[in-house]
Amino acid sequence: MDVLNFKNIINFGCDLNFNLPFKVENNSVLEIGFGNGEFTVKYARSHPEIFLYAVEISKACVIRCVKRAKDLSNLKIIRTDARYMLKELFPDESLNKIIMNFPCPWPGNKHAHRRVTAKDFADGLASVLKINSEFQFTSDDENYSNEVWKILGAHEALNPEKFEINSEIAYLTKYGRKWLNEGKNIYSLTFRKIKKFSVERQIINNSQIKINKINFFYKKQ
Image (cartoon, rainbow, N blue to C red):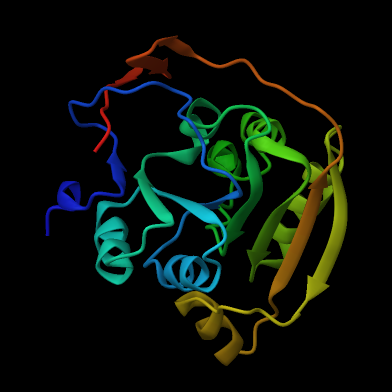
């Protein structure tokens, strides 16, 4: 299946060209790292009042999500690396909520830059969320959850609001069901943006971004 034929997708790394940050729809929610798209599609279908942006770097995962999405009009799938592109895609205070379900904990110091707790990523979250909006983080990894709670909770613009264990989850993912069946605890964390916060973007012009020596060119589908 050619994901570029799906009208509601932006596929980075192709010969593309449009303005960034792009105009964000009203009442927008962002999901980072959607896996097979099960949660993504259920959430979008159950909340027709919101517009869901879903970011994933894996082409295989994007294809699976596209197959599930079909005729959904309140979902846009973005294939890129959220670590670098979150703050480039979305302007300050443009998102009503950000959701991250069961991300890889990336244990070990050499992978620390991949975790939610990396400063650049945490600053990006704090920048693009609207004031009084939430970042919701769910994990089966206790150490990672504690690290996220400690580091993001100390961010000047984010208030640690809830740290729940095995709370009810409306839409369980494949991994969520797997971890529960194995008897693992599920940790649900909520942070609320409490003050204005901004980060420097690396946009060179309307059609080119230079990040970590990688150039991305893109266009509207």
